[in-house]
Length: 185
Image (cartoon, rainbow, N blue to C red; front, side, top):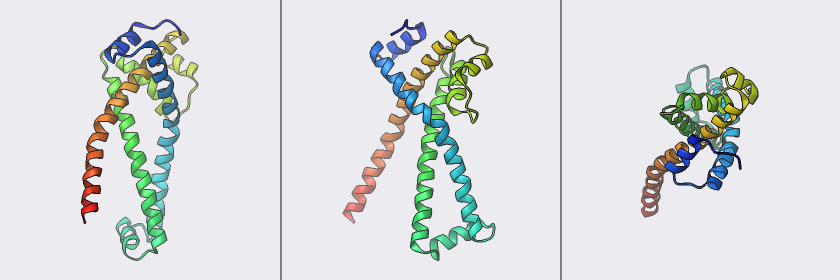
């Protein structure tokens, strides 16, 4: 374990975690962040394909296509369409949570804008730049860049965890109410 920056120490103190825990959190968060770009762009492409498929069925009127799918399409075709739409909304929801966490990082009082730029260019941007190119683009030497990136990832982890916690509680309660209602019927 290397020397910890003041920002890492502050974040660790803010969330009362140990050095070992912070290293594990950073490692796990990087694992999640590594798939963000591919999920984001795959979801965008899937949405475009789904829209194209739906409008291609019956002229270019989406309302007619949805009417066809809901009332006349074979059951298998309806189920496939519903499954694709469900997957799309699940992915869209997750992307929105990730983007919200990224915005929270940006609003962090110390170096928030810089942390945001590092995370966005490293994990969210369509262009997959090498880390050394990102450092140059942000006018940083390598050691400074990697230290700030580690801080940004740790801050992102806590922001994302907080968002997930607050977003999932109402969703879980709503699902429990729906399950109870369906069970009583």
